[in-house]
Structure formats: structure tokens, C-alpha cells
Amino acid sequence: MSLPLHIKVYFFRMLEGGIEMPEFEQWVYASKELETALQPDDYLELIAFPYKQAGAGYELRKLLNGHIHQGEFETYKLRALLQEALGNNERTLELVATCYDIYCHGYHFLYELGMQYGLAVEVDESFAMSRPEQRALLDQWWPGLETELRRALHWLDTGLIVLTGEQSSPGQYAYEDYRTEAEKNNGDRL
Picture 1 (cartoon, helix red, strand yellow):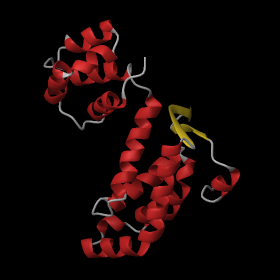
Picture 2: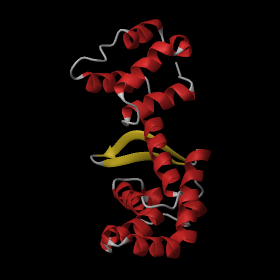
Picture 3: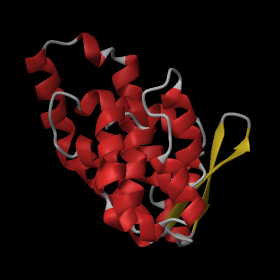
Picture 4: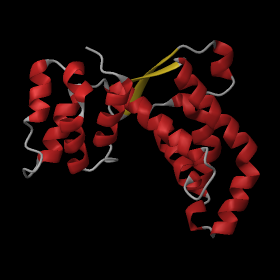
């Protein structure tokens, strides 16, 4: 049974730490739709869950992971990262550096973001720059960086790139790539 998107997003937010346990607990009790979206036993398990017990966070994450597809969760997290980077603010360089890490762990469709921009942040120690220096660097990069961020979002949004939530080998994220060869050659390099 597939959950409605807004319920999945609430689960995703809890899994990534964007919601505190008491808020999630109150949402579970108040949500009328949750009861119809889940199987009766699954709903009962969430309602009866010992939210205030020691170690509840770990156990709740295990429980929620059973109701979502890891690929959807990975897509949610990557989309959030790319969207936040589009904000072109004080966190953008940090997020671009994360694109380098993600690229190195198997998401090779992020070549341009990872190797052209993210690696430069890591090598140049851009985090040690003053805010005005960081702003100047972002202003210099912005037209191209924005294009690459939007391109990656487009691939995710249109299903040209589908994150599986699995690993192709230890430490390497897997994904399905439905882009044309021209699209692949326009951005990916291994």
C-alpha cells in the first residue's frame, strides 16, 4: 500500500530529524487520514508506540523505514539539498561541497556539481573564507552553478534519474538513469 505524499513527507521529516518526537506523536494521534492510509495493524503499532520510552527514536526510525521506500527518502533528501542550495545563501557552499561527497559515493549524475564546484570548495577551503569572500565566489559561480542545480532537480523531478536507496557496491549509492546519451554526455564524466 502506497502512502499519500504528505504522509510520506511527515515520515521523511521525522527520519531526518526535522521533527521532534513529541510533535510527531501529536501528529499521529491527531491525523485522521493516517488511520485509513495504513493497514490496521500498522496504524495500531504507531498509536501504541512508546514515544516517551528510552531508545524510542531508534525504534521509531526502524518502524517508519518499514513504511517507506528508501529511494523515495533519498530523493526527498537530495531534492531538499538542491533546493536549499538554490537559495544562494550562506549555506550554499557547504551544500555544494556535500554534492562532491555524494558524487564520490556513486551519484555520478552530479559530476558537474561535485567535481566542478564541490571539489573546488573542498580544495580551496572556501569554508575558511570570510563571508564577503564566500559571497564573491558564489556571485562568480552563480549562473553556472544555478544551471547545474536546476538540471539535477529536473532529472529527479522528471524521473530521468531514479534513486533506488540501494548500494551498487559498499559505500556506492545506486540509481537508475533514463537520460539520453546526449544528456549523459553533457554533464557526466567518470
